[in-house]
Amino acid sequence: MTERTLVLVKPDGVARKLVGEVVSRIERKGLGLVALDLRTVDRELAAQHYAEHDGKPFFEELLSFITSGPVLAAVVEGPRAIAAWRQIAGGTDPVEKATPGSIRGDLALETGSNLVHGSDSPESADREIKLWFPNL
Ligand code: IDP
Image 1 (cartoon, protein in one colour):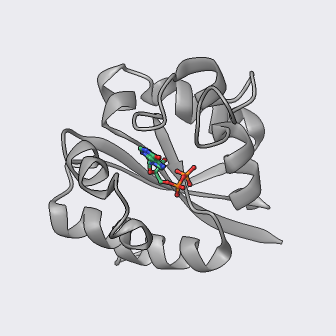
Image 2 (cartoon, rainbow, N blue to C red; image 1 turned 90 degrees about the horizontal axis):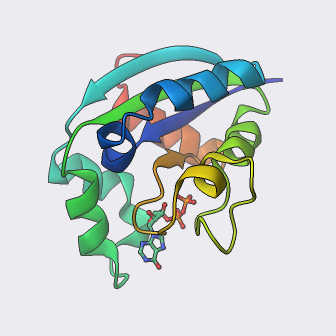
């Protein structure tokens, strides 16, 4: 069954010129690109996107980080796209959780700047795609 997921290359990934690397890994896995957009997000969108983390100690840091520069937002499609992308991205902590071969496992060091985002469930994907791409 075809699924869609929201992928972000966060400001650290854009600044480090890893957009091509990320898009390449998506395509090599066999997933498809439905929408791609490079943009700088405001605090309101960032807070909605990360609403589940509101109140946590790292919430403010998360908002200032994600709004600190351009991000690449993408809608990615394919069979089991949500799990497939999370496999490509690797676990949240790039050292303790992300395995070698994943984007975070290969290319990141810190949880606060772990390069990419991916929706974690069909419900999140639906919510996040509507938030980032309301006209899709
Ligand atoms: P995910 O991005 O792997 O789905 P989430 O638990 O949804 O991980 O957390 C969202 C983002 O918040 C993470 O990617 C990371 O950038 C940041 N984050 C999560 N936990 C921490 C933390 O303990 N310290 C700093 N940042 C964190």
